[in-house]
Image 1 (spheres, rainbow, N blue to C red):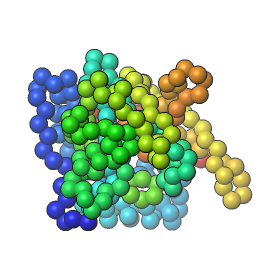
Image 2 (cartoon, helix red, strand yellow; image 1 turned 90 degrees about the horizontal axis):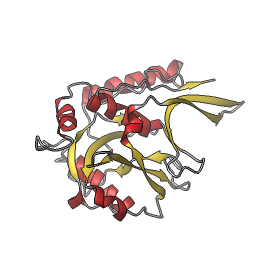
Image 3 (cartoon, rainbow, N blue to C red; image 1 turned 30 degrees about the vertical axis):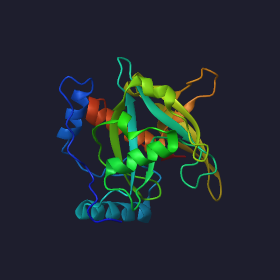
Length: 246
């Protein structure tokens, strides 16, 4: 990969822009640029937890570049919506889960925004010309160990109906009312098969029935953690995030 890759670029958002306060909050963030993944995570215990903490400390000291980027797309309108997708079941990573558009960095990408915008175009047909970058969130660590940089952006509302999910990667595209993220996530339970038993995984999730058909989309995992970070840094709304297993 190119050594002159640019992670976070300077963003200039006009002070009359609807999301100017959000852009300012993102620009003024001075916390850790890689968020820890061991806090409130009961899935990591003993030696595994110790190794995870050591790896995190090593990452902080080395200040590495992101290995993947996602685009948080918010509509620029009085009642904003946020773009989410449900990934196809055949994918090797996060199959069947609700996700932000985005993916791994490749040789052609010159910046984090470049990664996120390229992937957004490939996955849902979102064109760069329709996107205004608002800023960046701290990186999160995926369950496969990738460093993921979230890029926050807005689009005009008339772009919504032009987007079409890629059949190869996306099972469906939907829009989450932004006000949903201002409410506390529920304590959601998943069943997980372990070698000797079926365990229950408890974690926060936003549950939204976008078609009102009784089959809701579950926003949790890496996507949930990223959106929780957006709400805390961008809007001062804090949500506890945890993983507990019984």
